[in-house]
Image (cartoon, rainbow, N blue to C red):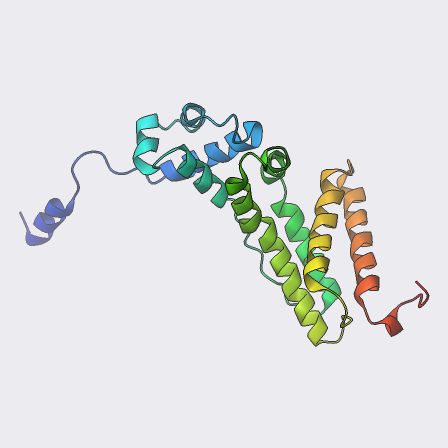
Length: 210
């Protein structure tokens, strides 16, 4: 046997090769389980059935039920970044589109579960909110900071409150408006227009008495 072949032979682990898709299958099953039954109804047996991964295999990679839930929720983390187009209006339009995509299923269903189970399982949902929706608000707050530096924002505007209101308004219009895509986009445009009028310097408003 040649030296290179001998080295490869000695370095090869015995048995079947590791299935690198197991984690992805299990996480997807965890998210589906949480979106349908929440933490209260969460079952490792059900996750095993959904994913097609043996329960023993799951147990070998996640210490317990809690670790499995935490990992599943963490996989939904937001990855929004400030678009920094150089203008507040185009920044907000871009972020609104990304927030709408981000808040589609299964996150929307899990968010509804948050409201119902928050008092029972605060440790899970506090992390979910931090990794998901708080990151959306952080991206909005970043573009507001930039806008203030360009003089597009009044000095008295509370950036944290504004970011929270913006994200909540965009999500609320999609989650509870029962609108088709065209109407929903029109509502988003109107919301952004309202925010821009409310945030800008007083001298730039169309109605100075508003």
